[in-house]
Length: 396
Image (tube, helix red, strand yellow):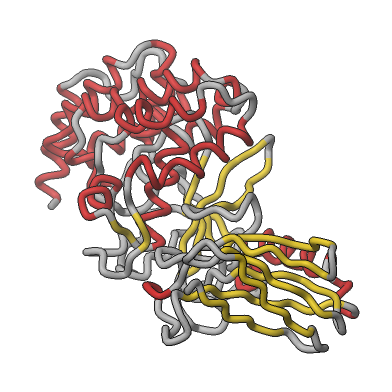
């Protein structure tokens, strides 16, 4: 190992003065020296990327390489690095929201070609071409996020399925199978966001507070703040998992909430499929989710007068609570002649914890209306008591 390091250092020195990087801020020089040594036999490719980058992209390439995982330094080609960077800048030049992003956010949360430890696919150009058509007419970053969120499933034809080959799939691994876990879906969506200049990173926990398992999702950056979303969106900062995230334990690594980073932070993103991998930097964002949950609960503190009703739709009354038996159907809620709510039930490809939920006033009778399989209007009445309730509806 020592011999390899010495040879690599000699190779770096032979490529030119290792502390002189034309057009690159001095703050990166030592980090680049170290990266070139770690690259070993691949050092010429890394050096080529640094030298061949256009003047306006040199710092971006330096940022990528300075904080690049050691494995990537040893295998990635200059062409891979340069194309990824070039299309990140194409998106930045094309979309107004990307132009408004500070360099620190652009470098860390738009530019990177990977989020976790997934296989390194060369997706940037392809995803730019796939998703730019959905956002080209968007007036702001919020509408762009909404457009990518609404169109990604039909664009890549990937759905949630626990039968996927592995949890940490790359975009093309998921697209080849047409299925992915929550982690694979999150990687896909973050790459789609980044391809059109939207800052995005992976959020997640290695284990919920009640020890029922891990979950990963997405975060997007809007006007200086991070918001969460996911592959099957409920809206920004809205999801079935917020009550669980709001009970996270910030100082317990197993039950905290993390967000991925490219630049080192001093802590790593726990990967439940391989806890030995510690090269993915992370930020502990537990407190933000706790605050979001508390704010949501405060808004519901009408809970003195209201309760939650969870609504699930199944194919028929002989079905069990299995993913394939669930139906995605619009449900409208009425109290007398007044509509007081509405939403869409979770279908077979959505997370099993994703359940349509309403907050309704106690001691009243509500009608839950929906269109059944034969096109007929169905209406189920429910008397609301003092306790939370669950309602099973049937499509047939």
